[in-house]
Image (cartoon, rainbow, N blue to C red; front, top):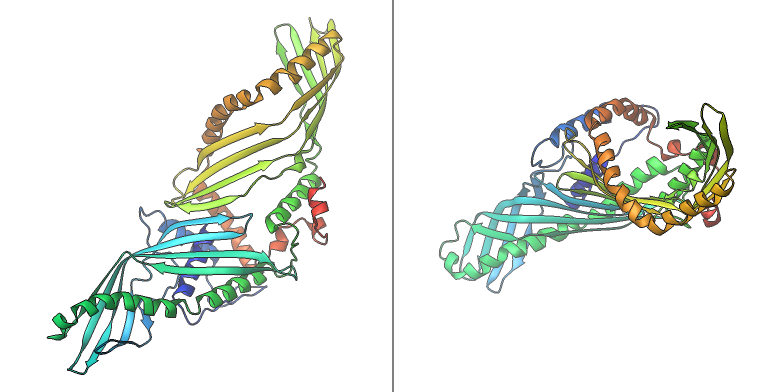
Length: 456
């Protein structure tokens, strides 16, 4: 999510019309003077340990920001503004970031508590002429941005829609040396602040869309320019399809479960040669959302499988093996899906939080063979009761499972984990970031279409 913050910083610079945005890349080594990404990450980690972080380290937002000369025609004369600059642009706070991964859409909002414009004015009327310094104090400035990505006809991932808007809660204007114009033009002066804001706003945004799209597309071409994305499915689903192939290549589907045995009283139960098929049928269910709010990263996603099947050989023995019965069993689960909501404060000294868990299980079927009449009893017990009560069973499981998962998360040292990955990030930066390097090698030259995607 720190990357999202960095992107927001770029968007902020673009929104305020920075004239020169230099993107220098290399496929072999870092350019001279370029900072390691690991160093920047460490600085950002320290920055967000503050209770109310302002700005983002490394975001070179111009402050003060110069504004071109302007004029406003009044009923009794003309008002000129010169040498105007805006102060406080770099003191922004991130209100929220909402990234809908499946829809490839990001909505974000930044806030600046106080912003001030300072410069010189000249008021020329048919009565007299006044000039001097002026200030415009803006409070409650809010910057709202929206960006969407899409796949072009040539298979390239490109920014397709970018909108940026500015709003404020209050504005106050002070003109010095107005003299007797002060009382005469008090009503006009009170409206000048809004005029100044409305005049600066289009200038600030006039090239933001073009620059933002060009900068984002340049970065996308750098990272994913050697890949072609299908327009029949979203790039996210393409990544999930690759992950399914990776699971199969790792021999995890079918998956062999370790042999199991336990003793209950005089009985010994053994399960061996247990296989589960269908693990690689996982897919996205609904959208995947990443949020940044209240200085906390939130991941909200739902993953589900298609039909799972399994087989095992069982044996029950008693009295040191004097009595035994063996057989086979098979089972199938129509589907399993789970919605998880995880949260991680930007202050990485804090532990991740397991906020929500919602499990669903489809129809369960079991075939039992080898126990004689007991086969029918077992099949009835498994095929009827769990299916009638599976919603209640899932509700009962969710609470303890959530607590158990939170206990495991409490053992995770997020900051240390990030630091351990920094050398890999520097290595990727050295070689040039490429999404293709993360894909399954066997699948690199394969074409994806809807038939392939839905054929598990």
